[in-house]
Length: 328
Image (cartoon, rainbow, N blue to C red; front, side, top):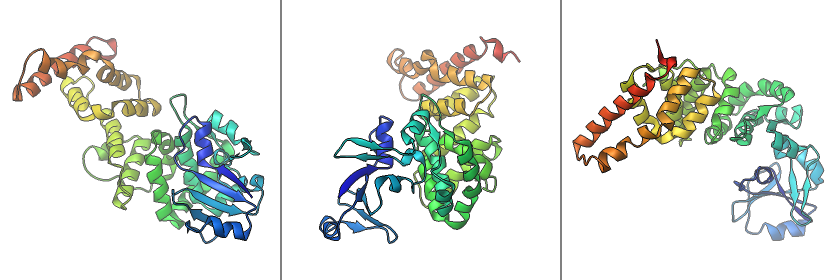
């Protein structure tokens, strides 16, 4: 009997991150060994011998070799295993190379065909493998395969499909997956209200639709990402020469500043929007206005908000009129 760490935990470690959860495969266990090990575990699958331990780890028993086991998995970045006793990486499909190169590659067409929801998981892997060093890409053949199964996943397994969308939207680089998904989500309706209806950018439109539907179906937890998507949409529609409008935008979105910056940079907005964004989010004088009004000027009560507003608008006006790009 041998025990292997598999899947996401190995992937996370190869990326230099702390594993999010731990899945194990036990090869060659006898029936007596299984009965002993699973006394306090809960079986969670009828097809495969999969159990959940007291620590909520998942353990699968198999009679296959580890090399055979990884070949039935979804993507090469998840088709890696670690021999905990011998300190050996089991990687017949070169998943470690794909993780390093940020490439999402399907193990096989058949593996996606068996479970269409895996197509959405592939999109999620784009977000998982992306980082500040660069965004992940789909292997061209895998992209072609995935395109066949995305809509099928929503049609055949809607509950599981939306759970995958929830997981996508919970990733820091969710917008990488949303861009890849946007060609397949034109059938979603944009939720009404706020500035949502005027968002033309297809990636942001997809994000708004998905966050709305996932929240409506009860999976929840996506309000922050909806605000982020709305923020990008709002920035693309405001008058860039209006200091008052820019200040209000800054007030409403400064709590998601860094994420918003990465998002709009990735989505390829034009130079003017990027420069306005950088004025708002990187100018130290603007960030210090609130502190200065309260600490150095001694304003109190309602006078604080009024003084901040006036000085901020004046500061922004001076910045947007100082560069040639704002010469209308």
